[in-house]
Length: 362
Image 1 (cartoon, rainbow, N blue to C red):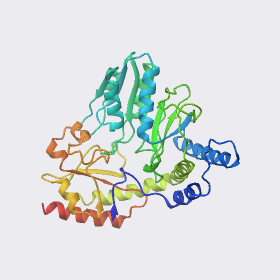
Image 2 (cartoon, one colour):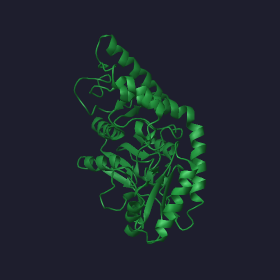
Image 3 (cartoon, rainbow, N blue to C red):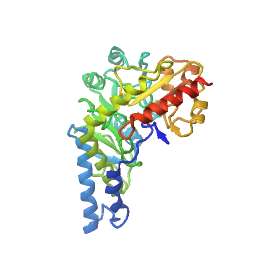
């Protein structure tokens, strides 16, 4: 199989698998237990936490969560429940974790969802107009999971702070792939998007911006996120973060070369979203008249997608592509090709050749 769905998940790094292995077997102690084995597990988690926090690179504190989705829910619900301000601002192309949580909160709070232009970028003047003295939180994604577009996070954070609001950044697709801009007060990330294990994420919090707890129980994570931590998952996340920090420039150059190889083969396709403000490991393209679902079914040994893995199978056109102004037909004629650290140029060239042949035969 040629794996080209890096936005859905990434292959587990061999170093991560090796580091996790002891914690899945003989080192099974509860990290919250007081005896030696428990303290050893707690120490391993502490090292992992420092490594993940170092990849954020902005001080503050970091709590492990079961996923980035949990971290986003915690950030939004915990911030709004703590604030006496009734308003939240976000963007139409955000991940469902943000939009669905905002919709849920819309029963109790005012929510403004800003449009984007045809390149997928929000207008900063529109952000300025939307954020008021009643705004508690502004949520903006760093790198879009469907089209790879990079939003002006630092500028959005500055606008939020100008009105006394906090800023949440869903950094899942950019974390470990680029430096996170200064400015956000809350940052959500996930291990399995940086060659770590699934079922663990994190919420980074600037000092003084901690949201109310979302999960109550045993008082773990200094009383702010209850639940027994998995040493194996935490260690895996930590090693993945360490490798990402060490390889960031190398990975960036590799992805840029793959982008050039891929875009050289898409003469009959249109790229969805900005090509300038973009993470180049995400190539979302459309072709007139294409049945993208049929194309994916025909190319069974090439892993590409229609868009977000969370929404695949729903049958609905992508809300991100619709937000760019695409019709349902255009959205359903689009595919997402994602690549990264372990993708070879030969795989990209072979896959695009076969994708072009299959598309032309429809």
